[in-house]
Image (cartoon, rainbow over the protein chains, first blue to last red):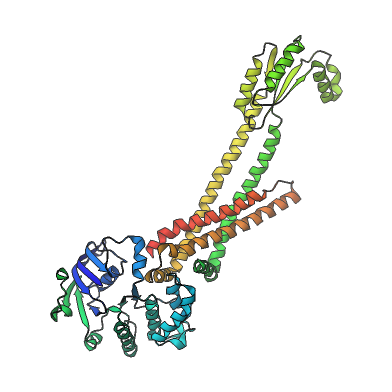
Length: 232
Length: 282
């Protein structure tokens, strides 16, 4: 599903952001990506999302290699992924349903399928009653649910969440995490970057810890799940 | 495409002042262009009328036989550059001179003016080089004493025309360049103002072409509206000129449509240059 093979990433000014990173996330897995600020978590997510390309090594997403994909094919690959940000990134001047519909409209979905799909997605994230509200009328947790509904619009095989609970209180965090678990249970892999160690402990999911651009701990390896990329 | 148009129209609603500013700046750029075009058009019309008067006059030596002149007339008429050729007899020249000079008409005596062959050239053959070449060929006839074709006058006429055309082209290009820069800047502002939307579009897998389309439509719409406004302003200027100064020609429908289309094209180009550069930064 997502495979990093000896990936290095160097930025012209910031220097080496990833230093020989290798891991594999399989279909339907739930993985936490953790580590201090500047550890390289966001760079890993950007590489999965092909917003950046590796300086060395290879990133494969859903069978497509970062080494061979052409720039114009990247949008099509992104439709297989859903992305959720810490700051929600909703369009403030549009209703909840318009925000979700936007993801379908810009990817050229058939107009007649948009309304029923938006309605189903809002039901899935528990916001069916707030379809016509504006984002500013919602709580932080609710806004993140809208962002998740939008991320699910194109039926992604993997959901990438960059600190999705970073701006939320405990109660909202638990709600969002439960929603992500439910999504994962229906077969979508989830890669979630977070600082929240309490959440990680409680969840008992696979955890990849990073520091100074390298993986310092991968619970899958420790559990003997054998995720060494060279062997895969 | 429907969504791209909706987004482009939304851009007008979201930033009405900015949109109005860019439309009026394009309109004023094109208005200045339109005014110059109007001047150029009228100079051209005047020049064309003057040009109609360009003619070659070959004076015939006294005593030339009618057979020789009529053979020459036939010859000259068959030159590809020649529109009309006419023999003006000595008597006709005298009558013409007398009628033109009025009270001094009796200073001329019969036979004092030579007969001449007057030649008019076809349109497109009235440039100084062609006129001189035809005049030289006519001068080759033995019975032709002298040839006059207002050499300096023809050259001056053409110089004025060349300067007018060149100034028009240079100023037009300069104005178009300014308009492209203005549109580019407004699109840059629009891209920055909509950076969140663009990042979301990309995140959900919109293609680059899709992301660009609303900006291109926005630029073309602004250019079209600016072009229409410029056309209106130019027309008003022409009406006012006609009312208070002198009546001038106005552009025909083709030029008016071309002007508005040029506005749309300038808007589109400005957007295309700007959007590609700034989208990368979002």
